[in-house]
Amino acid sequence: MQIFDPSIFPILAADGLTNGAVYALLSLSLVLVFAVTRVIFVPLGEFVVFGTLTLAALQLGRVPGTLTLVLILLGLAALMDAAGHLRRRQAGRAALTLGGALVLGGCAWALTHWLAPLKPPLPVQVLLTLALVAPLGPLLYRTVFQPLQNATVLVLLIASVALHLVLTGVALVFFGPEGSRTPPFAEGNVTLGQVTLSTQSLLVMLVSALLMLALYLFFERTMPGKALRATAVNRLGARLVGISPSAAGTLTFTLAALIGALGGMLIGPSVAMTYDSGFLIGLKGFVGAIIGGLVSYPLAAAGALLVGLIESFASFSLSGWKEVIVFTLILPVLLWRSLATRHTPEDEE
Image 1 (cartoon, rainbow, N blue to C red):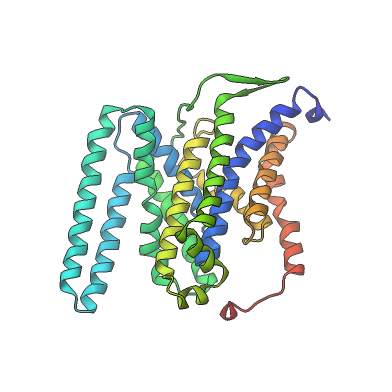
Image 2 (spheres, helix red, strand yellow):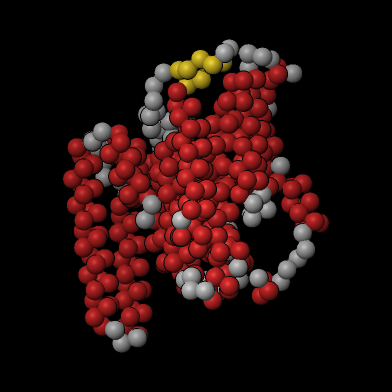
């Protein structure tokens, strides 16, 4: 077959590994969110979209609509927390919560409106993008999933799908129907033997690998990481030793949003991102997570790399069928896991 041509195979493999590295990050996020909170987080791809489109808006000198979404969610979260304090007759803490949210929101509004028209250097734009997109994770958890933390997995899945539809509509309102790309972080090419790769592709693989290493060290060496691992293994046991499920959920969604935003900025130069691109990208990460059984991080990362490779080779030889081929991969995995895994009632977890 033509794909095994020595002049084509390495290029397709490198392209597949580049996309697969981003899918691997999303797979790890999906496994982490499900293990800690039992939420199958369908809107993870929306973090990727908001990451790319927010950076694209900043490069045009515009204030991204992401700021409006953050401020709305911050207000909702503050009102919910304040209502809780008032029910416990803690009027002082309620006022402090609302005041803190007002100050925080005002600082975010002022900083973004000051920096965006100045078109600051790319590193500053990247940091501002992360500062705008990363808070979406904990705020969405506080306003949507924390009130449902004792609900069944099915209810959480329904809420997750609904949130995906809402965020897709919000992205259409904020960014419009046109697709956007961001400029590469690094120009030029690198020749490795007979293969010439773009520096951007190498940067994506390097950053993804470093991020996975950072996640490994976070879970192995830090107390918050060990608390998340404990919650993932046994939620009830973690609660008994003093680990707050709400704090674990907040930290988990923060990491997911951060990884999604980074993934969006890494993949932005190679993919024209539109308001509704998030579902397909998130679904490819989900295929990797399913290969890992939503429990194994190494298998999820390996599965996501496999998805990237299959997508790359399929897009060359069967471009019209590439999505079908990628998503068909999930069927034998689901069948095998349904036969090999013992069913455990949800209330026994």
